[in-house]
Length: 441
Image (cartoon, rainbow, N blue to C red):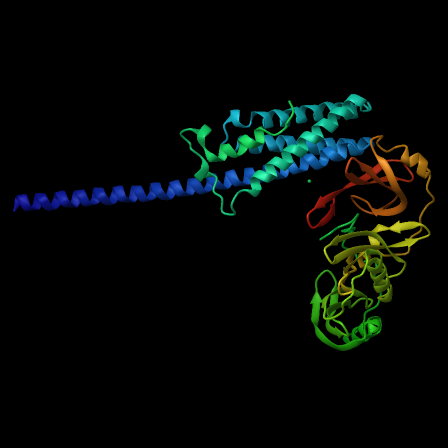
């Protein structure tokens, strides 16, 4: 009996030990999986943030050659320096052998150091030399190559790509993940909705552009019938009400050749937003015809003095930004966006949010400097193609009367804005070409 008791006790001991070991193993596995998940998240975050850093560097370097105002130079240079710092931090978080990304590290460090030296010049009120502009151009070319190579590498990766699976922690030099950066190292690296200028010019949340009275649902329906009469309205029905940025009455509208969803503001009865699609037509409008159609459409809805200030095309669709032009001044805060289907020969969308927020009667002071004086303040690297007198949204609050210069450098197009009173460069935008249209940033 004693032996039997000993055997039972032994088995109990073994069982307890096994369960304890199993529990420890489970804890180890769970802990390991948690750690791997955390590590993978860190790698991916750093990997894709690095992509953003590299894209930002290219865009800001291209802007640097075009800026001439001290404040704007300082702002762009600071952005570049910060992007270099963040890029270095993200690289250090990735499982890459230093010898595999040595040239990329060297370039980012060189760019950061040179940017810092230019910042020192700006702070000392020293102009960039011809040598500086030569180096800026070289560094921009390098950043452009780096951006292309890095984005090309990312495009080869699967959606569910797992970095840890491609890392050989016993021999990092042999990992597939590192191999992806070999091509990057072999590149020529030396030792960024279709939007036009100020397309989101909502200056504040105070609605200033709507009449100071309210309309009923019945009034709103009558407004839709009258404003869209030129489209030959066949049927209109209330689709509800919305209480978002604007309180609106919503209507489903059927016209001779389209079906539309129309929003009318309760305050003032303005047709704020129209979306829809064509149901007939075999037109093939030219770009000029589409622009004229967009301008006429907006005018018929009650938007006054609207003229095209920007357009972009994607196949048969044209996106047209309209702004009031009064006595030679373009009022960018009051933009209206229109979408035209050139094949259908119809407007299929309109959005007047900016206009409804910002449109008021304004009294503008006469410019204190001339166009020529303002143009003399531009970077010598730029070629001016067009110039306009414009009211633009201030970066922080309010509006600023400026001279707009549409310029080119190499294959890039820039919009540069000079304050008509102070001669300061208050904004610079660059057009980015994409496969589906133009962006401006």
